[in-house]
Image 1 (cartoon, rainbow, N blue to C red):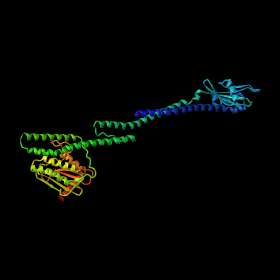
Image 2: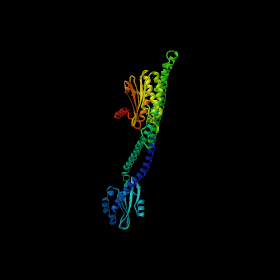
Image 3: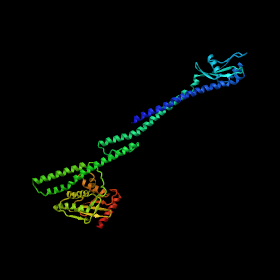
Image 4: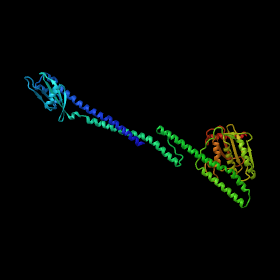
Length: 462
Protein backbone atom coordinates (compact mmCIF):
# COMPACT_ATOMS: atom_id res chain seq x y z
CA UNK A 1 0.00 0.00 0.00
CA UNK A 2 2.82 2.38 0.88
CA UNK A 3 4.71 1.95 -2.41
CA UNK A 4 1.50 1.96 -4.43
CA UNK A 5 0.62 5.34 -2.94
CA UNK A 6 4.13 6.63 -3.70
CA UNK A 7 3.94 5.45 -7.32
CA UNK A 8 0.54 7.03 -7.85
CA UNK A 9 1.70 10.32 -6.36
CA UNK A 10 4.89 10.21 -8.47
CA UNK A 11 2.92 9.67 -11.69
CA UNK A 12 0.37 12.39 -10.94
CA UNK A 13 2.98 14.97 -9.91
CA UNK A 14 5.14 14.20 -12.96
CA UNK A 15 2.18 14.73 -15.30
CA UNK A 16 1.28 18.01 -13.61
CA UNK A 17 4.87 19.26 -13.74
CA UNK A 18 5.24 18.31 -17.42
CA UNK A 19 1.86 19.87 -18.29
CA UNK A 20 2.91 23.19 -16.77
CA UNK A 21 6.67 23.21 -17.36
CA UNK A 22 6.66 22.65 -21.16
CA UNK A 23 4.23 25.49 -22.01
CA UNK A 24 5.96 27.76 -19.52
CA UNK A 25 9.35 26.96 -21.09
CA UNK A 26 8.00 27.84 -24.54
CA UNK A 27 6.59 31.08 -23.20
CA UNK A 28 9.99 31.94 -21.72
CA UNK A 29 11.70 31.33 -25.08
CA UNK A 30 9.17 33.45 -26.95
CA UNK A 31 9.48 36.21 -24.38
CA UNK A 32 13.27 36.27 -24.81
CA UNK A 33 12.87 36.42 -28.62
CA UNK A 34 10.32 39.24 -28.40
CA UNK A 35 12.59 41.13 -26.05
CA UNK A 36 15.56 40.85 -28.46
CA UNK A 37 13.61 42.08 -31.52
CA UNK A 38 11.85 44.82 -29.55
CA UNK A 39 15.29 46.11 -28.59
CA UNK A 40 16.30 45.94 -32.27
CA UNK A 41 13.23 47.97 -33.24
CA UNK A 42 14.16 50.65 -30.71
CA UNK A 43 17.69 50.76 -32.14
CA UNK A 44 16.28 51.19 -35.65
CA UNK A 45 13.82 53.86 -34.55
CA UNK A 46 16.66 55.82 -32.93
CA UNK A 47 17.98 57.01 -36.33
CA UNK A 48 14.55 57.63 -37.88
CA UNK A 49 14.63 61.40 -37.04
CA UNK A 50 18.00 61.77 -38.72
CA UNK A 51 16.84 59.98 -41.90
CA UNK A 52 13.77 62.17 -42.13
CA UNK A 53 15.96 65.28 -42.09
CA UNK A 54 19.06 64.40 -44.10
CA UNK A 55 20.65 61.66 -46.14
CA UNK A 56 24.20 62.94 -45.81
CA UNK A 57 26.60 60.06 -45.19
CA UNK A 58 28.53 61.85 -42.45
CA UNK A 59 25.41 62.72 -40.53
CA UNK A 60 24.08 59.21 -40.92
CA UNK A 61 27.35 57.63 -39.78
CA UNK A 62 27.31 59.74 -36.63
CA UNK A 63 23.68 58.77 -35.95
CA UNK A 64 24.39 55.07 -36.50
CA UNK A 65 27.48 55.19 -34.28
CA UNK A 66 25.42 56.77 -31.49
CA UNK A 67 23.32 53.59 -31.16
CA UNK A 68 24.45 50.43 -29.40
CA UNK A 69 23.77 48.23 -32.43
CA UNK A 70 25.70 50.66 -34.68
CA UNK A 71 28.69 50.78 -32.33
CA UNK A 72 28.72 46.96 -32.26
CA UNK A 73 28.68 46.79 -36.07
CA UNK A 74 25.20 45.22 -36.18
CA UNK A 75 23.35 48.09 -37.93
CA UNK A 76 23.27 48.99 -41.60
CA UNK A 77 21.33 51.69 -43.53
CA UNK A 78 20.24 51.27 -47.17
CA UNK A 79 18.98 54.39 -49.07
CA UNK A 80 18.03 53.89 -52.73
CA UNK A 81 19.19 56.35 -55.41
CA UNK A 82 16.94 59.33 -56.14
CA UNK A 83 16.90 62.12 -58.70
CA UNK A 84 20.20 63.89 -58.37
CA UNK A 85 21.26 61.77 -55.36
CA UNK A 86 23.20 58.52 -55.40
CA UNK A 87 22.31 55.46 -53.32
CA UNK A 88 23.75 55.30 -49.80
CA UNK A 89 24.76 52.10 -48.02
CA UNK A 90 26.20 52.23 -44.47
CA UNK A 91 27.41 49.25 -42.45
CA UNK A 92 27.66 45.55 -43.26
CA UNK A 93 24.72 44.24 -45.21
CA UNK A 94 23.52 40.73 -44.23
CA UNK A 95 20.07 40.68 -45.88
CA UNK A 96 19.68 40.04 -49.58
CA UNK A 97 18.56 42.64 -52.14
CA UNK A 98 15.33 40.72 -52.53
CA UNK A 99 14.61 40.97 -48.80
CA UNK A 100 15.26 44.74 -48.91
CA UNK A 101 12.96 45.15 -51.92
CA UNK A 102 10.24 43.07 -50.24
CA UNK A 103 10.43 45.21 -47.09
CA UNK A 104 10.10 48.44 -49.16
CA UNK A 105 7.11 46.93 -50.89
CA UNK A 106 5.41 45.87 -47.63
CA UNK A 107 6.02 49.17 -45.94
CA UNK A 108 6.43 47.57 -42.52
CA UNK A 109 9.15 45.87 -40.50
CA UNK A 110 10.09 42.28 -41.26
CA UNK A 111 12.45 39.69 -39.85
CA UNK A 112 14.69 37.52 -41.98
CA UNK A 113 16.94 34.64 -40.94
CA UNK A 114 20.58 35.02 -41.84
CA UNK A 115 23.69 33.01 -40.95
CA UNK A 116 24.42 33.41 -37.23
CA UNK A 117 21.05 34.91 -36.32
CA UNK A 118 18.31 37.13 -37.74
CA UNK A 119 17.99 40.67 -39.10
CA UNK A 120 15.26 43.21 -38.48
CA UNK A 121 14.44 45.26 -41.58
CA UNK A 122 12.74 48.56 -40.69
CA UNK A 123 11.46 50.78 -43.60
CA UNK A 124 11.75 54.57 -43.00
CA UNK A 125 10.64 57.34 -45.38
CA UNK A 126 13.32 59.95 -46.23
CA UNK A 127 12.99 63.52 -47.40
CA UNK A 128 13.41 62.67 -51.08
CA UNK A 129 10.30 60.49 -50.95
CA UNK A 130 12.18 57.21 -51.18
CA UNK A 131 12.00 54.38 -48.63
CA UNK A 132 15.21 53.69 -46.75
CA UNK A 133 15.69 50.38 -44.94
CA UNK A 134 17.46 50.15 -41.58
CA UNK A 135 18.95 46.70 -41.02
CA UNK A 136 19.64 45.55 -37.40
CA UNK A 137 21.38 42.22 -36.93
CA UNK A 138 20.21 40.14 -33.92
CA UNK A 139 22.63 37.25 -33.16
CA UNK A 140 21.27 33.88 -32.01
CA UNK A 141 22.84 34.36 -28.57
CA UNK A 142 20.76 37.51 -28.08
CA UNK A 143 17.55 35.70 -29.02
CA UNK A 144 18.14 32.86 -26.51
CA UNK A 145 19.69 35.02 -23.78
CA UNK A 146 18.46 33.83 -20.32
CA UNK A 147 16.36 31.01 -21.77
CA UNK A 148 18.72 28.25 -20.58
CA UNK A 149 18.80 29.66 -17.04
CA UNK A 150 15.02 29.93 -16.95
CA UNK A 151 14.62 26.38 -18.19
CA UNK A 152 17.10 25.13 -15.57
CA UNK A 153 15.13 26.90 -12.84
CA UNK A 154 11.89 25.40 -14.12
CA UNK A 155 13.46 21.93 -14.22
CA UNK A 156 14.79 22.35 -10.68
CA UNK A 157 11.41 23.48 -9.39
CA UNK A 158 9.70 20.57 -11.15
CA UNK A 159 12.16 18.02 -9.73
CA UNK A 160 11.79 19.56 -6.27
CA UNK A 161 8.01 19.29 -6.54
CA UNK A 162 8.26 15.66 -7.59
CA UNK A 163 10.66 14.80 -4.75
CA UNK A 164 8.52 16.69 -2.24
CA UNK A 165 5.35 14.96 -3.37
CA UNK A 166 7.04 11.55 -3.16
CA UNK A 167 8.28 12.34 0.36
CA UNK A 168 4.82 13.49 1.47
CA UNK A 169 3.22 10.40 -0.11
CA UNK A 170 5.77 8.19 1.64
CA UNK A 171 4.99 9.76 5.02
CA UNK A 172 1.27 9.40 4.41
CA UNK A 173 1.85 5.81 3.36
CA UNK A 174 3.80 5.11 6.54
CA UNK A 175 1.00 6.66 8.57
CA UNK A 176 -1.49 4.33 6.89
CA UNK A 177 0.67 1.21 6.70
CA UNK A 178 2.09 1.25 10.24
CA UNK A 179 -1.31 0.88 12.01
CA UNK A 180 -2.34 -1.77 9.47
CA UNK A 181 0.92 -3.66 10.07
CA UNK A 182 0.41 -3.48 13.82
CA UNK A 183 -3.12 -4.79 13.36
CA UNK A 184 -1.77 -7.74 11.36
CA UNK A 185 0.98 -8.43 13.90
CA UNK A 186 -1.48 -8.30 16.80
CA UNK A 187 -3.84 -10.65 14.96
CA UNK A 188 -0.96 -13.13 14.50
CA UNK A 189 -0.01 -12.80 18.18
CA UNK A 190 -3.59 -13.38 19.27
CA UNK A 191 -3.75 -16.40 16.99
CA UNK A 192 -0.56 -17.74 18.60
CA UNK A 193 -2.15 -17.52 22.03
CA UNK A 194 -0.74 -14.19 23.24
CA UNK A 195 -3.94 -12.92 24.79
CA UNK A 196 -2.40 -9.59 25.82
CA UNK A 197 -1.95 -8.48 22.20
CA UNK A 198 -3.65 -5.12 21.57
CA UNK A 199 -3.53 -2.53 18.80
CA UNK A 200 -2.88 1.19 19.44
CA UNK A 201 -5.87 3.22 18.28
CA UNK A 202 -4.06 5.54 15.86
CA UNK A 203 -3.85 6.34 12.15
CA UNK A 204 -6.72 7.10 9.75
CA UNK A 205 -10.29 6.90 10.99
CA UNK A 206 -10.98 3.55 9.35
CA UNK A 207 -7.89 1.94 10.90
CA UNK A 208 -8.74 3.43 14.31
CA UNK A 209 -12.19 1.85 14.09
CA UNK A 210 -10.59 -1.44 13.06
CA UNK A 211 -8.23 -1.22 16.06
CA UNK A 212 -11.15 -0.54 18.41
CA UNK A 213 -13.04 -3.52 17.00
CA UNK A 214 -9.95 -5.76 17.27
CA UNK A 215 -9.27 -4.75 20.88
CA UNK A 216 -12.90 -5.31 21.78
CA UNK A 217 -12.77 -8.75 20.17
CA UNK A 218 -9.53 -9.59 22.02
CA UNK A 219 -11.09 -8.52 25.33
CA UNK A 220 -14.09 -10.73 24.62
CA UNK A 221 -11.81 -13.67 23.81
CA UNK A 222 -9.88 -13.15 27.05
CA UNK A 223 -13.13 -12.85 28.99
CA UNK A 224 -14.56 -16.01 27.44
CA UNK A 225 -11.40 -17.98 28.16
CA UNK A 226 -11.28 -16.65 31.72
CA UNK A 227 -14.92 -17.56 32.27
CA UNK A 228 -14.26 -21.02 30.88
CA UNK A 229 -11.31 -21.52 33.25
CA UNK A 230 -13.33 -20.19 36.17
CA UNK A 231 -16.20 -22.52 35.36
CA UNK A 232 -13.88 -25.52 35.17
CA UNK A 233 -12.14 -24.51 38.39
CA UNK A 234 -15.37 -23.77 40.26
CA UNK A 235 -17.02 -26.98 39.16
CA UNK A 236 -13.94 -28.93 40.16
CA UNK A 237 -13.77 -27.22 43.50
CA UNK A 238 -17.41 -27.95 44.20
CA UNK A 239 -16.48 -31.62 43.97
CA UNK A 240 -14.52 -31.01 47.14
CA UNK A 241 -17.69 -31.14 49.22
CA UNK A 242 -18.71 -34.72 48.29
CA UNK A 243 -15.01 -35.67 48.33
CA UNK A 244 -14.75 -34.47 51.91
CA UNK A 245 -17.74 -36.61 52.83
CA UNK A 246 -16.22 -39.61 51.08
CA UNK A 247 -12.90 -39.08 52.82
CA UNK A 248 -14.57 -38.85 56.25
CA UNK A 249 -16.70 -41.90 55.58
CA UNK A 250 -13.70 -43.80 54.30
CA UNK A 251 -11.83 -42.96 57.48
CA UNK A 252 -14.61 -44.54 59.53
CA UNK A 253 -14.52 -47.84 57.64
CA UNK A 254 -11.85 -49.23 59.89
CA UNK A 255 -9.13 -51.60 58.72
CA UNK A 256 -9.20 -54.05 55.88
CA UNK A 257 -8.32 -54.34 52.21
CA UNK A 258 -11.65 -52.89 51.03
CA UNK A 259 -11.41 -49.93 53.39
CA UNK A 260 -7.82 -49.26 52.37
CA UNK A 261 -8.71 -49.44 48.69
CA UNK A 262 -11.57 -47.00 49.25
CA UNK A 263 -9.29 -44.54 51.02
CA UNK A 264 -6.66 -44.83 48.26
CA UNK A 265 -9.33 -44.26 45.58
CA UNK A 266 -10.66 -41.19 47.39
CA UNK A 267 -7.14 -39.76 47.72
CA UNK A 268 -6.47 -40.44 44.05
CA UNK A 269 -9.72 -38.76 43.06
CA UNK A 270 -8.85 -35.81 45.27
CA UNK A 271 -5.45 -35.45 43.60
CA UNK A 272 -7.05 -35.56 40.17
CA UNK A 273 -9.48 -32.80 41.14
CA UNK A 274 -6.56 -30.72 42.46
CA UNK A 275 -4.76 -31.22 39.15
CA UNK A 276 -7.82 -30.04 37.22
CA UNK A 277 -8.10 -26.97 39.41
CA UNK A 278 -4.44 -26.01 39.02
CA UNK A 279 -4.54 -26.54 35.25
CA UNK A 280 -7.70 -24.50 34.85
CA UNK A 281 -6.21 -21.60 36.83
CA UNK A 282 -2.93 -21.19 35.02
CA UNK A 283 -4.12 -17.81 33.70
CA UNK A 284 -5.38 -15.13 36.04
CA UNK A 285 -9.18 -15.02 35.78
CA UNK A 286 -11.33 -11.98 35.32
CA UNK A 287 -14.34 -11.56 37.53
CA UNK A 288 -17.65 -10.81 35.92
CA UNK A 289 -20.20 -9.08 38.11
CA UNK A 290 -23.68 -10.57 38.49
CA UNK A 291 -26.41 -9.03 36.45
CA UNK A 292 -29.05 -6.61 37.74
CA UNK A 293 -31.55 -8.17 40.13
CA UNK A 294 -29.24 -11.06 41.12
CA UNK A 295 -29.29 -11.80 44.85
CA UNK A 296 -30.33 -14.23 47.54
CA UNK A 297 -31.21 -14.59 51.21
CA UNK A 298 -27.85 -15.21 52.85
CA UNK A 299 -29.48 -16.47 56.08
CA UNK A 300 -31.44 -19.13 54.22
CA UNK A 301 -28.42 -20.32 52.20
CA UNK A 302 -26.21 -20.47 55.30
CA UNK A 303 -28.81 -22.43 57.28
CA UNK A 304 -29.15 -24.89 54.40
CA UNK A 305 -25.39 -25.45 54.03
CA UNK A 306 -24.85 -25.65 57.77
CA UNK A 307 -27.47 -28.40 57.90
CA UNK A 308 -25.26 -30.42 55.58
CA UNK A 309 -21.96 -29.69 57.36
CA UNK A 310 -23.43 -30.10 60.84
CA UNK A 311 -24.08 -33.79 60.13
CA UNK A 312 -20.42 -34.29 59.25
CA UNK A 313 -19.38 -32.26 62.26
CA UNK A 314 -21.46 -34.51 64.52
CA UNK A 315 -19.70 -37.57 63.09
CA UNK A 316 -16.30 -36.04 63.93
CA UNK A 317 -17.31 -34.73 67.31
CA UNK A 318 -17.06 -31.04 66.38
CA UNK A 319 -19.00 -28.34 68.18
CA UNK A 320 -20.82 -26.01 65.85
CA UNK A 321 -22.21 -22.54 66.52
CA UNK A 322 -24.42 -20.62 64.12
CA UNK A 323 -25.59 -17.06 64.80
CA UNK A 324 -27.22 -14.16 62.97
CA UNK A 325 -29.39 -16.18 60.59
CA UNK A 326 -32.72 -15.83 62.39
CA UNK A 327 -33.91 -13.07 60.05
CA UNK A 328 -33.67 -12.76 56.25
CA UNK A 329 -30.46 -11.12 55.06
CA UNK A 330 -30.55 -10.06 51.40
CA UNK A 331 -27.22 -9.69 49.60
CA UNK A 332 -26.46 -8.93 45.89
CA UNK A 333 -24.89 -12.35 45.29
CA UNK A 334 -26.23 -15.34 43.38
CA UNK A 335 -27.39 -18.22 45.58
CA UNK A 336 -25.12 -20.77 43.90
CA UNK A 337 -22.06 -18.50 44.30
CA UNK A 338 -22.71 -17.94 48.01
CA UNK A 339 -23.22 -21.68 48.56
CA UNK A 340 -19.96 -22.45 46.73
CA UNK A 341 -18.05 -19.87 48.78
CA UNK A 342 -19.46 -21.16 52.08
CA UNK A 343 -18.70 -24.78 51.12
CA UNK A 344 -15.14 -23.72 50.26
CA UNK A 345 -14.62 -22.13 53.70
CA UNK A 346 -16.21 -24.96 55.69
CA UNK A 347 -14.43 -27.54 53.56
CA UNK A 348 -11.14 -25.90 54.51
CA UNK A 349 -12.10 -26.20 58.20
CA UNK A 350 -12.69 -29.94 57.87
CA UNK A 351 -9.64 -30.40 55.69
CA UNK A 352 -7.06 -28.44 57.68
CA UNK A 353 -8.17 -28.96 61.30
CA UNK A 354 -8.18 -32.08 63.42
CA UNK A 355 -11.33 -34.01 64.30
CA UNK A 356 -13.16 -32.56 67.28
CA UNK A 357 -12.14 -28.97 66.45
CA UNK A 358 -15.04 -26.59 66.96
CA UNK A 359 -16.05 -23.99 64.41
CA UNK A 360 -18.65 -21.23 64.11
CA UNK A 361 -20.43 -19.20 61.47
CA UNK A 362 -21.66 -15.70 62.39
CA UNK A 363 -23.63 -13.31 60.21
CA UNK A 364 -23.67 -9.58 61.02
CA UNK A 365 -26.09 -7.35 59.14
CA UNK A 366 -24.76 -3.78 59.16
CA UNK A 367 -26.33 -0.74 57.53
CA UNK A 368 -24.42 -0.92 54.24
CA UNK A 369 -22.84 -4.39 54.36
CA UNK A 370 -23.22 -7.96 55.53
CA UNK A 371 -20.29 -9.61 57.32
CA UNK A 372 -19.95 -13.39 57.31
CA UNK A 373 -17.45 -14.82 59.79
CA UNK A 374 -16.20 -18.39 59.58
CA UNK A 375 -13.96 -19.21 62.56
CA UNK A 376 -12.51 -22.32 64.12
CA UNK A 377 -10.59 -23.40 67.19
CA UNK A 378 -7.71 -24.96 65.29
CA UNK A 379 -4.08 -23.94 65.03
CA UNK A 380 -4.93 -20.86 62.95
CA UNK A 381 -3.16 -19.51 59.91
CA UNK A 382 0.42 -18.48 60.61
CA UNK A 383 0.70 -16.08 57.63
CA UNK A 384 -2.66 -14.57 56.59
CA UNK A 385 -1.05 -12.50 53.81
CA UNK A 386 0.48 -15.61 52.28
CA UNK A 387 -2.86 -17.40 52.56
CA UNK A 388 -4.58 -14.61 50.62
CA UNK A 389 -1.77 -14.64 48.08
CA UNK A 390 -2.33 -18.37 47.59
CA UNK A 391 -5.93 -17.49 46.96
CA UNK A 392 -4.70 -16.03 43.68
CA UNK A 393 -2.66 -19.04 42.62
CA UNK A 394 -1.55 -22.54 43.57
CA UNK A 395 -0.27 -23.22 47.04
CA UNK A 396 2.80 -25.20 48.00
CA UNK A 397 1.23 -26.99 50.98
CA UNK A 398 -1.08 -29.32 49.06
CA UNK A 399 -3.80 -26.66 48.78
CA UNK A 400 -4.91 -25.34 45.42
CA UNK A 401 -5.70 -21.95 46.97
CA UNK A 402 -8.96 -21.81 45.02
CA UNK A 403 -11.23 -21.82 48.08
CA UNK A 404 -10.15 -18.40 49.30
CA UNK A 405 -10.08 -17.16 45.71
CA UNK A 406 -13.74 -18.13 45.21
CA UNK A 407 -14.63 -16.27 48.40
CA UNK A 408 -12.51 -13.25 47.44
CA UNK A 409 -14.11 -12.95 44.01
CA UNK A 410 -17.57 -13.19 45.50
CA UNK A 411 -16.84 -10.37 47.97
CA UNK A 412 -15.04 -8.13 45.48
CA UNK A 413 -17.86 -8.50 42.95
CA UNK A 414 -19.95 -6.40 45.36
CA UNK A 415 -17.16 -3.97 46.28
CA UNK A 416 -16.30 -5.84 49.49
CA UNK A 417 -13.22 -7.76 50.54
CA UNK A 418 -11.94 -10.76 52.51
CA UNK A 419 -9.69 -10.72 55.59
CA UNK A 420 -7.95 -13.58 57.36
CA UNK A 421 -7.04 -13.28 61.02
CA UNK A 422 -7.20 -14.86 64.49
CA UNK A 423 -10.63 -15.85 65.81
CA UNK A 424 -12.01 -15.64 69.38
CA UNK A 425 -12.01 -19.46 69.37
CA UNK A 426 -8.24 -19.39 69.09
CA UNK A 427 -7.89 -20.54 65.49
CA UNK A 428 -8.37 -18.97 62.08
CA UNK A 429 -11.08 -16.49 61.20
CA UNK A 430 -12.12 -15.59 57.67
CA UNK A 431 -14.17 -12.40 57.46
CA UNK A 432 -16.20 -11.92 54.27
CA UNK A 433 -17.42 -8.34 53.75
CA UNK A 434 -20.31 -8.22 51.26
CA UNK A 435 -21.24 -4.69 50.22
CA UNK A 436 -25.00 -4.18 49.90
CA UNK A 437 -24.68 -1.22 47.50
CA UNK A 438 -22.27 -2.03 44.71
CA UNK A 439 -19.13 0.14 44.62
CA UNK A 440 -15.70 -0.23 43.09
CA UNK A 441 -13.70 -2.92 44.89
CA UNK A 442 -11.19 -1.64 47.42
CA UNK A 443 -8.50 -4.13 48.30
CA UNK A 444 -5.80 -1.96 49.84
CA UNK A 445 -5.35 1.41 51.54
CA UNK A 446 -7.02 3.43 54.27
CA UNK A 447 -10.56 2.32 53.36
CA UNK A 448 -9.72 -1.10 54.71
CA UNK A 449 -9.18 0.48 58.11
CA UNK A 450 -12.54 2.27 57.85
CA UNK A 451 -14.25 -1.00 57.04
CA UNK A 452 -12.51 -2.70 59.96
CA UNK A 453 -13.89 0.00 62.26
CA UNK A 454 -17.38 -0.55 60.82
CA UNK A 455 -16.92 -4.29 61.26
CA UNK A 456 -15.97 -3.77 64.93
CA UNK A 457 -19.00 -1.57 65.41
CA UNK A 458 -21.23 -4.20 63.80
CA UNK A 459 -19.82 -6.90 66.09
CA UNK A 460 -20.38 -4.71 69.12
CA UNK A 461 -23.97 -4.16 68.05
CA UNK A 462 -24.53 -7.93 68.02
